Image (cartoon, rainbow, N blue to C red; front, side, top):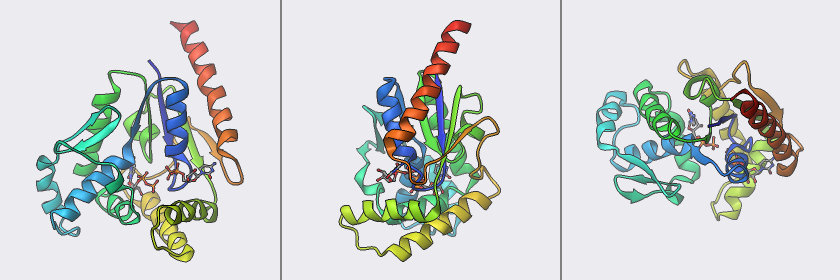
Amino acid sequence: MIHIAIDGPAGSGKSTIAKKVAEKFNINYLDSGALYRIIGYYIFNENINLEDANGIVNSLGDIDIILSEGKYRLNGKLIDDQIRTYNSGKLASRVAKIPEVRKKVNYILKSISSKESTVIDGRDIGTVVLPKAEVKIYLTASAKERANRRYKELIEKGEKVNFEDVYTEIKKRDEADTNRTIAPLKPAEDAKIIDTTGKKIEEVLSEIYTIVESELKNGNKNS
Ligand code: CDP
Ligand code: CDP
């Protein structure tokens, strides 16, 4: 088995890269941000006050999330496009500060990944969720480039946003994710840091493929 942790700030390319790595090596992919987005979505839709941490914690027992054929289901219903909006990213970041929410997400991630080789992307995968992952990658890029990438994506989806707002939100999210006390965004000590500013996806992928291939070879030698 191999476990690959891909962490980094919003727009650094985690999900794009993690999906490709999973395809290339034919292993499972888990998107941890989607789990925070699903919980944020549920809380918002149930009209639970986002300031009411106790209310949020009390409702966690009503949230059943499973992975089926590569997609998450929330209480039996497929959930995907609904959580890919600009607003759901902001909601995710707010619920992600609550320790019990993190505990629930980590339990889901660990129970699925303990059974098979997996790539997980997020903020604290190499530091908290999979501290023993054989490969740890930390992707980053300048805030302006990340905002530009995200802006283009949102415009293509038909969302009405302006660049300055997306840029401000990316900076706010960096600040919140880096400075929170629980599981802050930071590279694991043994992570390979890749600055993707000005790099094409293919360039980043080729660097990561080399790292994974070398690990697979060495892992095989040692077993
Ligand atoms: O998951 P994360 O928020 O880290 O980023 P993403 O959703 O994978 O990537 C955000 C956007 O940047 C996507 O549209 C990617 O195609 C694009 N991207 C890029 O242009 N160059 C890269 N080196 C990585 C991602
Ligand atoms: O790529 P982007 O940051 O837009 O979204 P995401 O990866 O789906 O994560 C949404 C939010 O969930 C992040 O801003 C974090 O606040 C939170 N998150 C987290 O705290 N820990 C993780 N492992 C993944 C996401």
